[in-house]
Image (cartoon, rainbow, N blue to C red; front, side, top):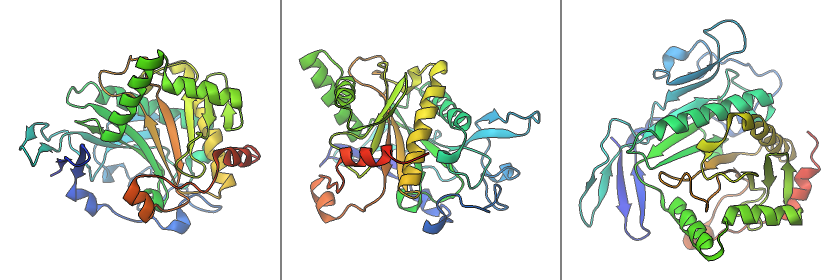
Length: 335
């Protein structure tokens, strides 16, 4: 059983999930991405077509474009080794030693039937299906009043935390708002109180005027490498129209989002030789979905270095690549 314990020294919660230690770890560094001759279906992979019986009962699916109703393009299932469970309670206990029952949800988005094809090399239509599935699950989970935040993320590669090779995303709903997100909302609120504007929207407009850290843009989204990037080649994607919540993204905008996400991932994939990375969709928590001070966005965080003693001891980042240099390099990558 999972439990959340409160760390008073930093005002944040820690999830203890012993079942996560039982996860299979099939991934090797050398096989993080697709290569010529690799199979599209792996016999013993629980995420491949034909192995649906090896996974927990399906929550959601998008069908394949062919006529066979049993074929799928995207599946969503409960994580077999969840960090949090819907069945647990969300009551608070204790005083000095505070804790909460391990209430939440943990789901897996199987992004394609293809075992070996990375998201960067998927057709834009398939990237769009994955994003639509992510939003559908976000909206459904937020209907549960116990959940305060839904975190949507993708781990690619061993150093990014992937344990199974078949490309997938994950979703975790939590009964609390994690400290990092609370801090981001608080700073954005302070900025709004002082200026009347959205911190993220103003930063995006400033970056677009300066242009040198812009990687790509279309009529609805922009991809940029932030001025104070914490990691080499860290890239963010923003909607040009202000929206606080990913749940507010209209159906007609998914195609443009998928196109720019594919562009960014493919440039990173080819320019950095298939780097390990984490991807997150940062979105407003419960009660803040319609507030003007925040803007949802996607962060892509390549894992090209390992945080060491200074970073862990201080909380500060050391970045070895200026974002304008990284943006210039990626713009020249042919895709």
